[in-house]
Length: 218
Ligand SMILES: *Cc1c(COP(=O)(O)O)cnc(C)c1O
Image (cartoon, rainbow, N blue to C red; front, top):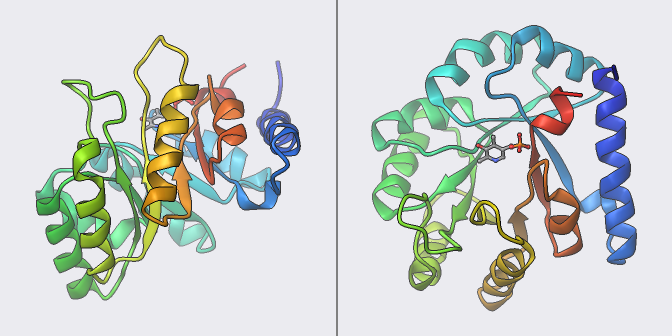
């Protein structure tokens, strides 16, 4: 049995080692604790260990846990990382500090409109369907340039690109392709890497890793 603090330190050590191998500064890599399916008590234990960034992938669940947690810990940052329906844009604009799953023009329009109303402007990552999979969220590779331009023309700050590579295959080529798209469009941020592949993602330029299982389970 390891404690939440020990698991978090292990993940931070792994990030630091991968950054060092890639000659990167680990300070430029944000660890997002993915707390979907975890209780408020489990989340509090990670907060006590010093964790400040959390990610949720379903709006209903985020709304049931986070208003209370954010009231107690106003310094935390909450990231929306899951598929988002346009009719949840108002909730998203009010609750999230960053949205990693901006994948279509209609959603951008809806979030931007609600952000203006709420006077709260979450930063966004454009999610790319990097493996061109039928079922996956994300815009197509062909749409990336236009999506980036649309975000730049909107009131929402652009954080970068996000992707989830296909399951069960080596993720490195997909991370490298996303990094290349980011360079081509002069974008800084890359939201890539989960429990199974965050070290690879850090080597290939991740600026935000989204880690759930490795932080919450032994
Ligand atoms: C659940 C989830 C993660 C974290 O996955 P783990 O394998 O548990 O680390 C990362 N990103 C997204 C979009 C997720 O839904």
